[in-house]
Image (cartoon, rainbow, N blue to C red; front, side):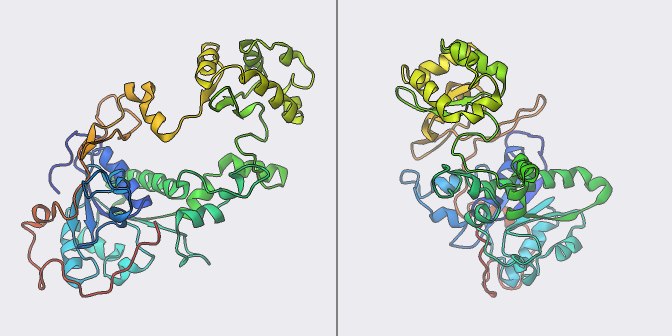
Length: 403
């Protein structure tokens, strides 16, 4: 499929056909691109990925921040998969591809003659990953948006304040959980392919998000109760919460009696360590409100950044709560070398290209996200012509399953 990327990453030489839009699919293929794979984004003619039209726009570039944050380093090919001719052209691309990723409604690719069985006839080694809402079951055909997965999957019930309603996670955790499982499965299939050949993988939002409940689920099984909604507090650790300071909120993460004693020493309140109400974790849980009142009276004397410095020096896990602008200005992120130098129409996009580092290979790319169809001519040049010209519109299109 041509040169892999501009950085010779661990997946250099791996070719990916990206038939996805919105978030879960594009984030999966973005991870692969950041690891060095060459990703061809297959987009509907004149329309493209739906996120191309979801504002805000980056300056006057015509490109939205939503699309740009998920499609860096990819190449865009306009191709109508719902037409016979577009499907034929796609199958020609499949012959030299390693991976195909799609997130259409279940059955759509089959209707278009682009199911795994058909693709495997053209390329027995192809790894075909479908990102769906649900595995086969009563919800199979339900439109699966992240909101739906969070509601059904238990995440929403444990997010929010104890005296308030359930709250959607600030991150699209349903989409992201499926993305991570999809990337893991694709890499696993690439590793196993020399022995096992090509394969079809299906990764669902709902079941992936329920799997992310992990110890929250374990807590429920052990107690026989639903995991509580406690805001930033923790049901079995205290103080493990956000407290108010003289200016901004401060997050405390005290997970042992020893760390609690260090906290009390750092804030010059050793009496709180010997107080019987607070001397053990179980006692602190029983007297949560009293301890919170004592701590907030102390923390109100200084600002969050000053307390961050004091507690960090004493080895107490704590941090000021930063917003999404402040996080990208943090010196830790800037100096760790994981952000891009991407700039579009005068707007800097210091996106995290890939947070893990390899000792023997580069990751991430600063290549800008593509314009719609920018690489169509280059990619399709040399492919055998089809009967109706490459982007015919013979069959009804299908939208993705809300992902």
